[in-house]
Length: 171
Image 1 (cartoon, rainbow, N blue to C red):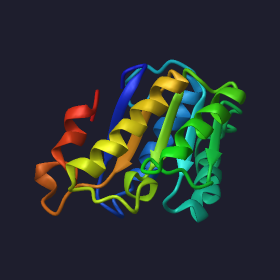
Image 2 (cartoon, rainbow, N blue to C red):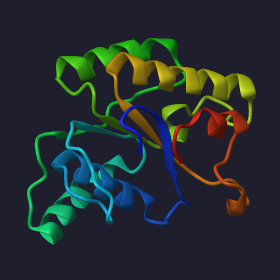
Image 3 (cartoon, rainbow, N blue to C red):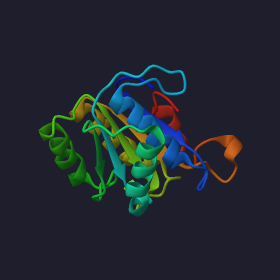
C-alpha cells in the first residue's frame, strides 16, 4: 500500500476480509511486518460501519492469538461516516487531526455502508463518493483504504462503477 492516497481491499461477504484487514491494520499500527511486507508504524483509524457489533470480539481474539496488546495508535470509530453526504468529511477530518492521527491510515469498512444511499453503478454517485474519499485523504494527509465487495462475477473485480478502480492507487 502507498503511504498516501486511496486504496481498496475487497472480498466476498463471509470470506474473512474484515479479520484479514484487521490484522493488516494492527500490523501497521505496531509497525510489524505483515505477511512478509514491511510496514511503517503510524496511527490507524478503523471506521467500523459493517459488523461493528463484533469488533470487540475480533480485537480480543487478535490480542489473545498474538499475545500482544493492541497499541493506542489503533483507534476504532463506530459512528456513522458518510462518503456521500457533503458535511461529514470535513468534520471527520478535523476529528482525525485533533486526535493527532493525521498522516496515518484510515480504513473504512465497508464502502457500501459509508454511502448506502448511493448507487454504486452510477458514475455520478460513485464520483461523489470518490471525491469525498479523496478529500478525506487530502485533509488528513493519510492513506484511505475502502473495504469493499466484489461484483456478481468475482473474477471481474470490485462491484460498482469502473471509475472507482480507476481512482485507486492500490487494490
